[in-house]
Length: 277
Length: 277
Image (tube, rainbow over the protein chains, first blue to last red):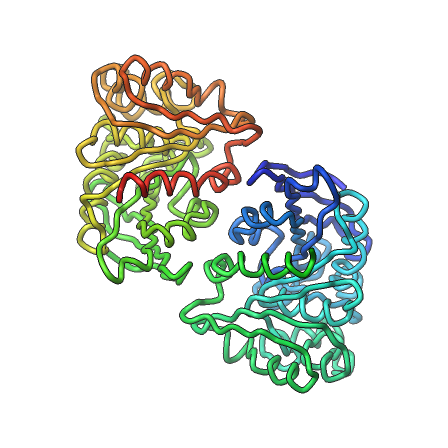
């Protein structure tokens, strides 16, 4: 692991790091905020998965998480959204596939299967790296994310309910198997047999019996992707049928941007901290 | 004036706007955050002047001012740092001069005098535009900024003490006439007669009798520009001789980045709000 940069913020340290990833067969970059409490004892870890087109940097620059994370003593880990590099297959001019659009799946189709293994990356390789290199209490982990990263957070939590104590999302893609901006990506990463897609769809994971104690979801009513791409009511249905608690908050007039995310960031951090205490 | 974008944030509206500027003889872009209180009555205006290489967007993305500005009912106006456009003379590969480095002066030297009139722009043209188009209480204005923009805030306040009620700065250039990264720019914008530079130097304005009630300055001790470019002790000297109150806070371990600025943003906003009430 290589330190790209560190900078003091709100009494903690905002760092950027890179490493040679086995899962993604390329160098990967990620951001970690270490709160001041970590000087004295290991602290809970909250994972933030970002949306389409983002790198580790978007939420680091615009998410406004450091003030409250420093107050609450939370470590915030922000992975990239896809493998990177010239050797990584991509579709230039398609922001919904390839670089910046890993969808947190392990691709099985060629030529993507070698690099696009973001599920393994965020659930196995990077957690092991964090555990080795940071003062992280890995017994207390939560996960959240935005849009494609909200999809990532929900599916990762449902498949690893023994590991994560809390999960929330900002404007998540709740049913990527049927949404126009994710279905073509799943087909290219996972093949045409839709059965293979089910383990990457929060609503279908619930249908198939996976459970998580509760979710918090914020969704802006002025989000341009609401009706076609996001459709939180599908998660509401799936949770109701599965008996899973969902607090879905429709936020009047908010869009899909970091102005929305940063407005409700404090709420999410406090919600997670209460469950990671 | 053209609206580039608006986005709800913390109950207010973060907007980006552009207009054809007379002062700079080019199109200029700026950001305005209008807090929710402006629905009911005009609100105080706080100007934020940015540092070298920045546009209006850096503090908008990374400054983390909206939450507390929305609480306190402050409008935040963020101008660009220089004229822009292909017709504007520039020195490519010199980040300390030209585009992104207007230094808030009115250039008198050719070929810069036509466009580089940022002092007039931020003190006359843009305030008039804000007064016409936003619910701003122009009787209650404050100003702050970072680095080159801290220099801008200090000099603008000293020269317009009748208009601004409050002034603060993050890591300001306090004596640009002698600092290595600003002296060459002043020479190119204003000519070699150093007398013309005095009205753009906070320490010399104080020496020449300009006064402002009080300043708040935060400065990180790990700021790589501290000893050569910033040197807040020169402002401390000048304020002491002039009998001007200066609260200079050396912040242990903080650098020159927005991680430093955003950490102390709340303090500055509250400090201004108390003086703009």
